[in-house]
Length: 307
Image 1: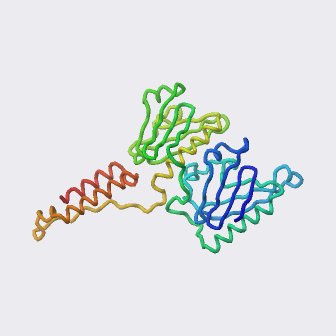
Image 2 (image 1 turned 45 degrees about the vertical axis):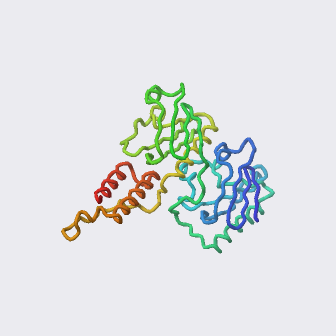
Image 3 (image 1 turned 120 degrees about the vertical axis):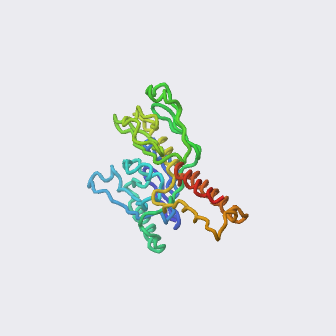
């Protein structure tokens, strides 16, 4: 087993999995702390490298460099939810290496690369998440309210700091299948951050300003809010349909009955069982968010015509 300890955590590799455990130092990013331990299967890894520091005499102050892991696109719901908006300190796939452990980091990178070569792991995109989403239920505090997700339903509840438009809209609640997308932005400096929920069938954004949008939980000024909101967005994204998943075709309309196939034949036991099975399958696709409400209603109506 290969192991390397850095300023902000520890990475271990057993030949099949890379285990990333955040450190407990107060300087560790709140986002990393909120995510906790991450288990990365080898098939999710596209590459790994140790980048030695190039600051000459300041090397002892800034460490030996950074160990960086590159994942296959679509492998991790956290990276999908964050959309490339993480800084280096918040990226769990970077490890700052102390000055006396550069050799260990190089050995670690070599071990992972050798395993990738032996296993012939492709570095292209994935069509499913290979890293588990955070457990549920999960709750995130924002500047103007609280967001929560129990695995099936997303809820937003406003506090007294919420804009009047949000408070007038009241608490928000959507089943997972109603969500089209989740957008996360961290609060940086004097800029607001947010988690915004795009809902199937809603055209446009209710307000470009996240403080006025009742589908949006805002963050400002606290690193803790960034961590909780990133965890909430990841838990939801990891249970939505994968963006690269193969498209599911809506069942085609059944052939019309002819004189040689009387209408009574459509109601015999075998055909009835087929219709019931198709309705059950459509219900599962709708519940998992693969079919929208409109697509489910249309497909259901088509199948019921067989009875």
